[in-house]
Length: 369
Image (cartoon, rainbow, N blue to C red; front, side, top):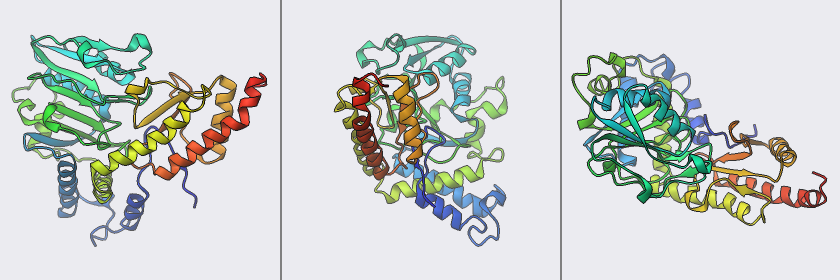
């Protein structure tokens, strides 16, 4: 079987080694005579999986004891509501930095729950860049500051984070968690849907500073309180066991690659393969993001016109490249090159882009396309 060159934005590529290992354990894990999907979440076999996922994530990201790890459901979208429900107390205001669709969605959900303000926004510039740190305006008495660390639709990424002092910094890292080292101590809360860098869809990782897990939130439904899940080690209800199992395998795979530092170097190489083609194309390909805000996870670009874009995407699909269509809200093209996308696949895409330009530049100049 020929594996596709998978550049989907999410659910996205998983490491082939992980899929092979899961396939070998599909019918019988730990000599239990059962699939992981059939295990009780209270069994000793599943407990080993659950603990391994916690241990590997804490080790890989160097998560300090001051922070708890929660495995939740509902995706990042549920966190848009859970965060203000738990942290935006009466009399406080939350501040949001708007850098794309998902940060705006988080802002809109928080508005339904409490007082929120915009600390900075690049919407007027079509979200082509991350705001400079000095342009972010923060009041003194904020409940928290919220950012989205990587913007999948527009292909921008934070390469340094604001220092918010005593104000908790909260980050939606759904699309770049585990892609580079982090100083977790600078964040009050990090959340991430797994389906881009961590594993399959179905589980959401929350890394939360323990002092932000509050008692006395009886007005909030039990399942929407962080304390519920912290007190029960993410086992208050049946967790997404298959997703957490695959998450544990992905984390093990990252360790075998040399850890997050090694993955970061590889991600930079992959991105540079594609950005180099864009920059040398003399305008045939145009990147959406400004150079200092470019994402190492989502490379977004356009071609000179719609006809060429359609031709590019059609021929790319025929050549085995999957998921290169830009988001429906912006069009163009997007290559999502998360951790599991091999360098070889990015090299092949770069070569395809170079050859496509060679084959079509004369047609463009003659106005035949």
